[in-house]
Image: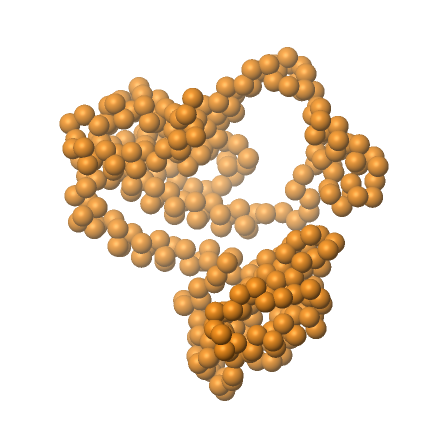
Length: 339
């Protein structure tokens, strides 16, 4: 994981300081409670290093805490030129405690440390600017426009007749999105738009996907603001496996876990079809239950299976070289197509 802080606001310039040596970093991690830490890689053989990785395994959680410090020998002029940016993967309270102690020690020594909890909202806020830069490079690129405009054209009615969904259908001007037509998982509470483009060619599908990146950013921002505190699953051991920590200390929890893994649970008799809006279109599952713990029938509706069949309609009249662009605009997952 790396953090790009080039767009961060400028910070006051402290006095120049020598970079931390590798052994200093190890000693600092050990002093903060990372007993078994060790040097994973060194890019600079002199140990006045540009990048150092410190790793420590936690016996209680059997997880890995990775501390990555990017060193810069020049004086600090902005957060982007910081002497060290501390990044860590947060894996439980023990990890957090050690990481916080290391952050405090580094800050006490004049080393700027950036908490990943601050990095995520920073990346969210910067995304529109990055997307704008990307669109400025790609959207009006004459080579891309020449290769995509007028290639692989399909009309709105033909797209419906072929059973196309997702950006391919919306790229023909049809405003169909499962999240709007059949809301699930609370999508009806989010404010976002259905992106369409009328031309129905490869360029239209390309523009739709760029527009949908902005809508995805809107959804992520709203979801982060709405995300509640507390548990994320129901507290019913007959349906949801108990936490691993509970299994280690409770025989009843272990029995529940064994029963769920080996037998599952019975569901009412009946049938249901549930679609979701995947990146490639409508991904649906039809399930028929006979009242037991296993479905009587399961049928998947993978969008790529339906979208790729339209190649017979999209390819004729184009160059052989255009097939690459057409298939790319369909963006198939061939694991969905292989039957």
